[in-house]
Length: 108
View 1 (cartoon, rainbow, N blue to C red):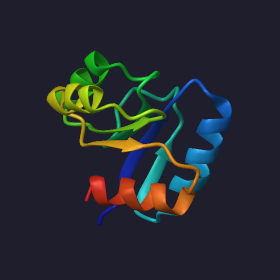
View 2 (view 1 turned 180 degrees about the vertical axis):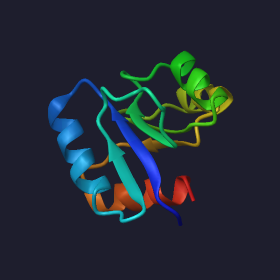
View 3 (view 1 turned 90 degrees about the vertical axis):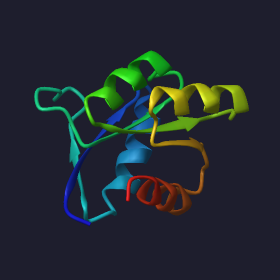
C-alpha cells in the first residue's frame, strides 16, 4: 500500500487523540491536521455525530474514502451511510489494534 493521507474529523479531543495514536501505527498512513483542508485527503475517519451522511456524500463525491465510526451501530444508519458512499461503517470499539485492522482493510 502506498502512503495515503488520512484526516480524523471529530470534535471529541480524547477520541481524536486515541484514533490518531492508532492510525500513526500504520506506516502507509500520513496523518493530516484536521484544520488542514486545503488539499483534501485520501481518507477521512469520522463518527456518525461528526460526519452526517450528507457530509459523507460530499466527501465521497470528491473521491475521498470515508470511514464512519458508530458508537451505537444501527442497520438503517449503516444503509444511509452506504448509500452516501461511505467506504465503511464500523462499530466503535475500545480495542485499538482491532479498529486499526478494520480501517486498514476498509481502505485497501
